Length: 65
Image (cartoon, rainbow, N blue to C red; front, side, top):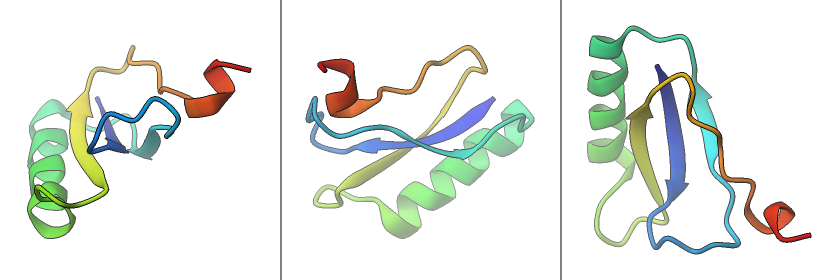
């Protein structure tokens, strides 16, 4: 699994960031939850999530150009 950071407000022009990849599912979910509690929140600019290995990161404005 991958751990990603994406825009908390779903802005199309903000790219996703890869935090870690090739992480066991259990640890990926635990790490993402920890990061969300530590650095996330309702008003935080980023949201942390564990996703599958086949997830393709959103490239932000690069997708439109």
